[in-house]
Image 1 (cartoon, rainbow, N blue to C red):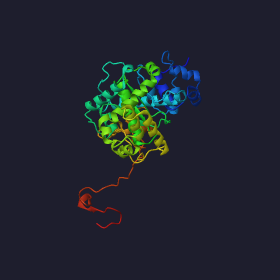
Image 2: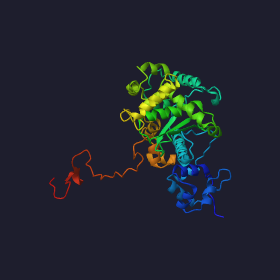
Image 3: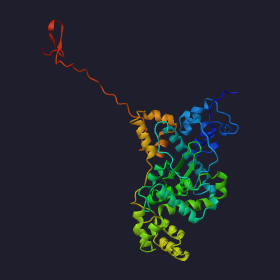
Image 4: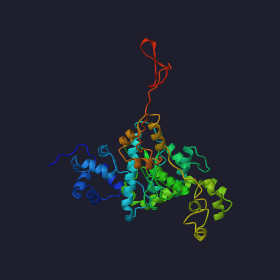
Length: 401
């Protein structure tokens, strides 16, 4: 029987494979091993570690450092929240969840060098079962969070800054589907929430609403299990949607800004509130400010103007970007004096992964070209060389002394 490596973590292999959108059979083909071997390597209940020769091959195909497979990993049954549980999106959901696992690994390494903001997300559920929440309760919780974070009742200038200041780790990535706008979960290991936002729809108002939606999951569904998520998926998504609207558009201040409930009035305040007209219509419905019949007419006018493919100002409003992971890496490799290559190896992921997820400029971790220059001989402070007997030596043959 071939020798096996010790300390191999099956979950790390599965995470890396799913992050690359590979099935077990596809990975087996690429590494020229059997599918049954890959299956055994990923079996957390009765794991069979790979033989040593497989480790560098796996690392090369999955674009990770060999040390990645030996990083400890603990996870309980807290749910990861997605916008859709469609079977057709199953592999993309696995990818997004795995990429969120990458984010946790990045944060875990960075936290060895720097202090990220402490988690400051109040437990506004106070032990209450999420299934008992009414719309008024969600409105109250959104208002309480605004009060706790001292945001007032006006537009939030930079939502991602607010979320990151609350100790929530935020990253961004190309997920691969417009139907998966983001994913979030609480970690029982770090007791910190993580949010991964999709770059697939590059629209500022969409990014903000997606972030508020995931914040709703963080606040309302912290203790929801994977089983409970599947059983109550529609309700959970409706609650997160209602929270996002209530948090971004407080009822009184938002409606006070509208001179009417027309599309013209909504588009007029879009740049101020940085929220889409579509979200405003849904918020007016949630607060009872428009009747179901009038809401239908608004959506008809909305479609007539061809806004479903893009609203006015979508291309001019800024797209907020998370900064804490990027800033941490810049501090560590700058003031901290840690080589970029050393930090990257410590994380265990490819430079492209870390650059993308941490919102770093492309090439940040690229190996620098050798900067070798020729060092010429230099005269000492005196301008001439003196030989034996006090004779001045010429600097080059033929020079006059």
